[in-house]
Length: 315
Image (cartoon, rainbow, N blue to C red; front, side, top):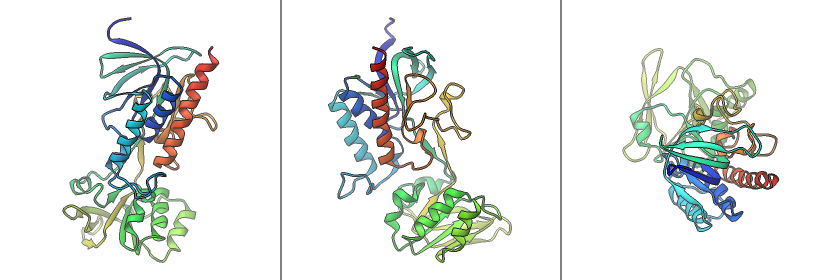
């Protein structure tokens, strides 16, 4: 084996709640896991300033601090956490086969099992003001952050089921919810549209887009523009929820692992098993329904248990 090749029992790709939880369980099972964090160590949660809904934090915490706690716990049991990006994969289709991955176009890892927890990236509008205020009132998760806007006015951007669901969720918490729809119709299912229409404190503005998110350090409003008339208006809100979808971070696995039309990895039944033996998927990379830190952590646990049982079956 060359100096640039390393053989390990368990490789974990990605470092969010799913990856770190998988690492904790895999390390305790003596799988001696090695984790490559990707370019965003800690994953999406590190962009969240406050986390109030993860069990075990009675006073809340922030995303970066929580990920650091999980990292320390994984390392305490022997996980080796490395900063690096997986740039190529060559997975075996044989039971007991060795899976090869390339790190940073240089180092080769030969792994008996691989747990993929690369997550999904929320789609944003791409405005400078929006990007600057992520964590300061701009969010891509109403379930995560809606609580902080109790009794306040907020905007939801989007036209599909996700936007409708986020708006109706927020309507139970917030004073008023305004949905900005780029076209003159919503793409959401009829059932979800009816729910929106029947909710008194939701207003839908069609042919409307955000021109700029207003505020220096926190959201103070949005300047919206009617894309038919060009008319602009300022909407006074303290929260902006972008609900235009997520993109799973699975490009590197295309035509290798089974995935749906959006790119989410498909797992078998209630397990984390993919279509290839010894390859497991956990967290948002295979979950387009819930996308919560606690559910990601749960599937991370499952993936480590599945990996341990897989290796046990080869003996």
